Image 1 (cartoon, rainbow, N blue to C red):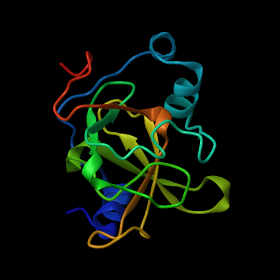
Image 2 (cartoon, helix red, strand yellow; image 1 turned 60 degrees about the vertical axis):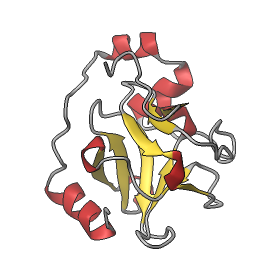
Image 3 (cartoon, rainbow, N blue to C red; image 1 turned 120 degrees about the horizontal axis):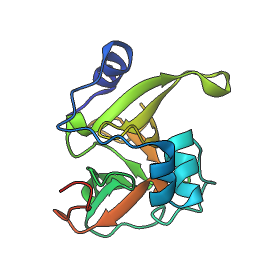
Length: 156
């Protein structure tokens, strides 16, 4: 189980090595994504609270990166945080998420990115439910939900 101390360590000293990397030019990403997906994932935007497709979705499945298809979160780790964005307690695998200290808006937060393609996903906070105490606050638009074990075309 990943802890807040692990996340801070990754954000400050280096992230786990991903299994693979997917890199594209801004034009290639723009051709694959909707304008909102591009704004959030490639330009570190944020969708409006309580508007995302997965905000109130609690059925089984896996949530993958909308850009590269890397499976990131299991629906079994999703919970209602009241924040207005989908929230998870743990990623599927430690090496699939990248952490970065974010000083935007005059506060220190930890940004969460796909470790395969560097897509901005959201932020993680140490105010989630036990046992991890983590709340991965993720933009719906940065995710694609599928059945457990399904693969995105770029992931194969």
